[in-house]
Each structure stands twice: as structure tokens, then as C-alpha cells.
Image (cartoon, rainbow, N blue to C red; front, side):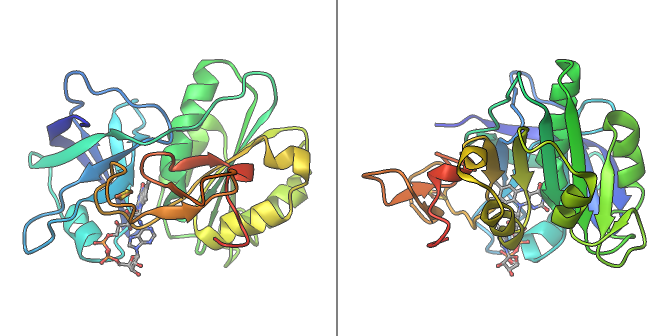
Length: 257
Ligand SMILES: Cc1cc2nc3c(=O)[nH]c(=O)nc-3n(C[C@H](O)[C@H](O)[C@H](O)COP(=O)(O)OP(=O)(O)OC[C@H]3O[C@@H](n4cnc5c(N)ncnc54)[C@H](O)[C@@H]3O)c2cc1C
Ligand code: FES
């Protein structure tokens, strides 16, 4: 069983319509980039926990970046400093860091949460790292892009062209002419991941990791509600919560995704 924790919210920051909650890291809690926590989002019949990637704040503290899309995430966004959160974790398989190649990190929307953590870890190890973040509008995440740009170096793209490169994050990658021998790490909407994978050759698939954001129930591999189509022989489906959420691109069957 994963460990359960109660943590106090030490800081709350609004970034556009998203909210960063910085938690007092509970004793014994240690996560690697790409892992997630399963958070109890209030009562009112919401008995199923909601998954959120472990991220980090500007001072390295345990943080969650929450985009309000439904009842649970809206409840989380309305929490205040001093309140407590109940969560399980860290859960799932995180990113496998390639120490020999250039590392190219590709985030879409709230997919920046685990990649910010990953970029910080790579920088700590002195690895060559390029972080790219695509969002719809220039105001979507307030001043968060400026904060991340200071800690890691960041290329931003926006669909409305109000910040950084105008276009998608994949068009930004083309414009940057990134090294095709790099290792790639991506987290974002499923269409973005599928477009990325479609553009990759065989050799590149094996050095590309994607974090998939499936809907989850138990979060620990018991209900199979988060199954994703597998390309592994003998395993038609893999659980995003336990065998993922991070997969190498060649482990998934993208035709059936
Ligand atoms: C491993 C993992 C890590 C995640 N990390 C983050 C994060 O760091 N920040 C963040 O803001 N969100 C993250 N998500 C997505 C987040 O879990 C969902 O937005 C949340 O569970 C929605 O719950 P809700 O009650 O607000 O919405 P619901 O009322 O349950 O749904 C509202 C809408 O959101 C869609 N939705 C619900 N769950 C998901 C999901 N898991 N993925 C995509 N769409 C969903 C529904 O289809 C519906 O359209 C992550 C998801 C996973 C699986
Ligand atoms: S959410 Fe239950 S198996 Fe993944």
C-alpha cells in the first residue's frame, strides 16, 4: 500500500486561472519527477481521489500546480494557507533520466508541473537540458513562465502569440531545430503527445518518454480504470497509475490510444 499523508498548505500562488499549492513536505515523503499524488478533494460525494503530478516551487518545496477543470480541481484551487490536504503517494513510475544525451522537455498546459521538477533535477546533475512549454494564451499561467525561466531557462509558445513563439510547442521545437539525437520527455494533452509521437522515427521512439494523463479511480493498479493500450507483446493494456504514468513511447500502441 502507498503511504498516506496529511500536509499543511504553506503557500498559495495564483498563476492565471491555475493555482500552485506549496505543501509542508511530510516527514519521509520523497518523490521523483513524473510521480504523482492522489488527493482527496473534499467531501460532497467526491470519494474518488484526483491525481496531480508532484512538482516543485521556486524554493524547491513540494508543490502541486492545479488547473481548475471540474469539481475536484476547483475545490483544490479554493484551498487556503493553513488548511490540510490528504493524499496518497508518491505513486507511479517517474521519468528515467538519460545522463548522456541532450534532454529536451516538452510541456503542454499543466503538463509543465512534472517537467519543471524534472528540469530542476537535471540542472542539479549538470545535464544539458532544454525546456519548452506550450500554452493556449499568453495569460494562461500568469507570471509562472517568468519564474520558471529564471530557474531553468525556458522557451514558451502560445497559440494566440501573446507570449514567446506563436504556434504549438511542436512547431516551436521545429523552429529551434533541436538535436534529433536528444532524449525527449513530454507531458500534456493526449493530442499533443500523439502528434509528437507521429513525428518520431524508430530510434527516437525509444528515447522518448511521455507522461499520460488518464482518468483514475484507485490510483494503485487495482481497478484497471486507467488502462492504456500496450505495444508490449503479451500485455494488451498497461495501467497508467502503476506501470505509468510515464512510458517510453514505443511501449504504447498509439493506433489504439
Ligand atoms: C498522473 C496524472 C497527473 C496529473 N497532474 C496534473 C497536474 O499536475 N495539474 C493538473 O491541473 N492536472 C493534473 N492532472 C489532471 C487532473 O487529475 C484532472 O484535471 C482532475 O482529476 C480532474 O478532476 P475534477 O474533479 O476537477 O474534474 P472532473 O469533474 O472529474 O472532470 C472535468 C473534466 O476534466 C476531464 N478530466 C478528468 N480527469 C482527467 C484526467 N486525469 N486527465 C485529463 N482530463 C481529465 C474530464 O474528462 C472532464 O472533461 C493529472 C492527471 C494524471 C492522471
Ligand atoms: S486507477 Fe485503478 S488501476 Fe489505475
